[in-house]
Figure 1 (cartoon, rainbow, N blue to C red):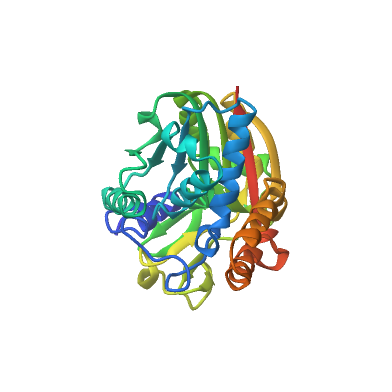
Figure 2 (cartoon, one colour; figure 1 turned 90 degrees about the vertical axis):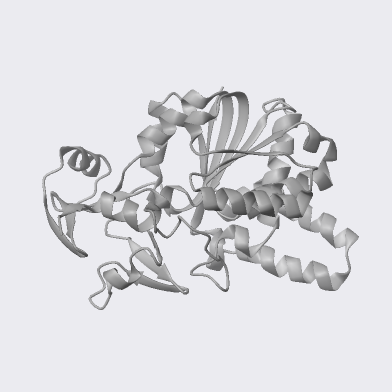
Length: 332
């Protein structure tokens, strides 16, 4: 079998014809991992509250685009829409809802889910890539997208190649070497594609805000973080007992995001970096506690307590609150 760059190997693992993300996958208790979306509807609800605030401050037009990138099931955007209907129902008929999704099977699942959830009350438009979308004003949202970009693996001046499922560090790659030096890494992951993604978004829309949630830190980790998630088990990619061939395309593979790399990519495309915050701080600042208070006033105590326990998973430091970060950009 011919050797290839690690980024090509990872791209096939996740996005190949039979790749992990090419077909519908359960997320949550019955899947391989949890996300903020699978934990509580109040994640989408808080984003809905933020979208309404953008309309109120005249940053987002009432007929602007609300676009999720990499929606998988479509549950996140559906939760956003549900809360917009509750908080500001008139916006449901003016805002345009878009999903960027490359896989036909997932597009079909999302369409069916929206049809079952909203009937004809909500119109959903799909594009396979950002380059197909042209608009004047938008709010872009993505959850756990940057950790799913293919990456190169780097170790003390050499990049990795994959022969079969074996990893060897013996490749010279000037671009990877330059990035490693820039982010002070002598080993770890160097993401591929952030620059192109930022350029594509910047050319799509004249005025927008982009918000994304992911795990990682502003500065690069000093070691490898790449790992496999399967049935809620976390297995480091370099674990001696790992069977990569068995896990290939049947499990999720991911790594911690270096947000400085994301920031640099967007700023190079003329988009302004606004902030990086822990998820718990971001959600509180955007009003998740206000939404829970509204719920408390309108439902019986048992339901409120159930939803409160789910929402705690989003904001408590020992769960998703501290490890996950929110990064935000604007083009004006």
